[in-house]
Image 1 (cartoon, rainbow, N blue to C red):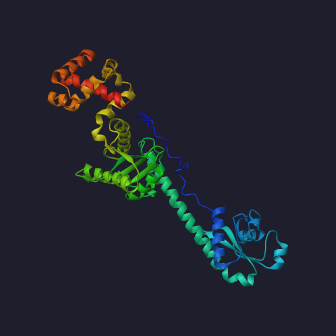
Image 2: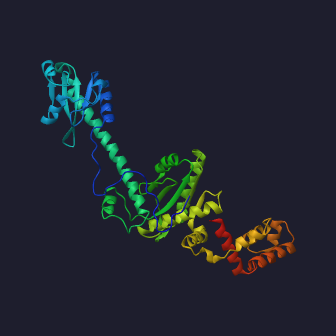
Image 3: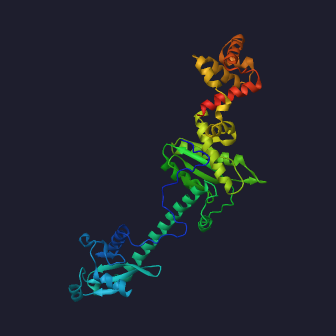
Length: 398
């Protein structure tokens, strides 16, 4: 996964192109919804049903041959805003109609379509209001579901914008955030979740989040902005880590989903969210290379490699020195590099290093002197050892 420079934005989720000034777009009758109304109402009364849009065009019918034709009876209903019964004589005079009853479909006090029942008006009149009410209930439910989905997508888009900081946010941003019930004063930290099957994990993790948690689906990972507990203004880290560990275990055990999670730190204020997010991104990048078999990465444990990565991006990483490259060129069997690695891991305790490498202390002394000759840095000196360590670390995270 590539890391964007500090002044770049991540790709925004490909949802709607959202105009923050307007509200939820009203959903009028569409062919799929119209046909759903037809199918469900026909099951109730066992009569042919037609559904016409706001222009009188048949967009749903039990008789598919009538789809896309103009229904003049529906046009009259739209013009008069009231029901219209068609007897045999009128059916002969009007175009594209049969005997029956046509009633307006109302939504928010507006006629948005017409529903027609084919048959003798005397026989089907008793079904009229039932069919009309059923159609309007289906429409209201569809609109509600559509608005809920829109709100979720809008919420996700607003969250994505929050990841980039507040400096360039549109004035309408905070108005829209408030309408969706997002409280930006709630303390949150960023968590990056990566999995092989993002869509399945996305559905699972979304159900586990609290009402104040936010999330964004990215092409390469999922961003979680989870609410955290504060104790005397300090982040209760252990609670967050326990929750993340639980998620990782459950995904692996019950869903057979291997995942990795990188956690940023908590920063005060809304602007702190973008800082936490970037910490999590950088942490994931370096930690996957340094500890590929771990499942949870915490920024606090990877501050130094993250610093090196950012130094490399800013062009000052070369100042560390090419000590790793010098060793690699002369170390054909990688003995020196392995010795230096173990020497660092064992904090320079000679006996432990020799024992772990299965070599004599004199052999270890010779290798350390050889490292000094090649790099002009003596591992037995703290400052020189730190320089060597930085060079090795820098190479690993490239």
